[in-house]
Length: 225
Image (cartoon, helix red, strand yellow):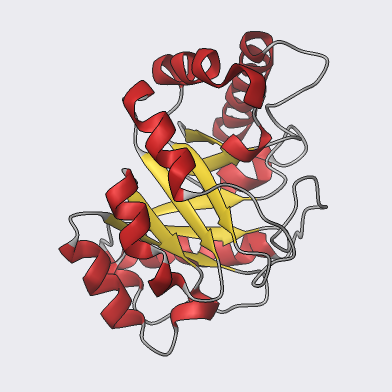
């Protein structure tokens, strides 16, 4: 069983951005960029300007997570800056979801939707390229895992198989050695790696990546046994 890895750039060492991007070009599947407006969540992180700055140094897809109250104010900015996936929260687009999804596709970008822990699965999942299940309440790194989300991931996996849907099933929040086996066993396909799984103050990025890869491979082997 294989999964794809998406490092969360809000957790990276901002003093060594170029070097870390070069490393991720060789190892990661996506780059996860959190955009927070201080309203939808009480934090402010990265921006379209950040995406513009890193775009020339990366060859893998940039995946933008819009934790903002009004995602339509940001979609064109992110597309123009170089985002490859644009992923608003279901809670912010449910009144005009089809219009938003169509607009992002018309910009020739992939569309994802992020689902908060208390949010049910939406009726438009067949239109999506990716669904991100939050396994923590959004806004800050390092929050505790919410185990009830395992059933939501399992249900998405079953719906995908039953209907031949194409969306990727991604998990954001507390992806680490304590949760890898549980997440993979219910159908997680992309893991967003933050402070608890990858970015360690006491380890180099290369050593942390090796440890993460070893732990994920072990988790996958245990599932297949």
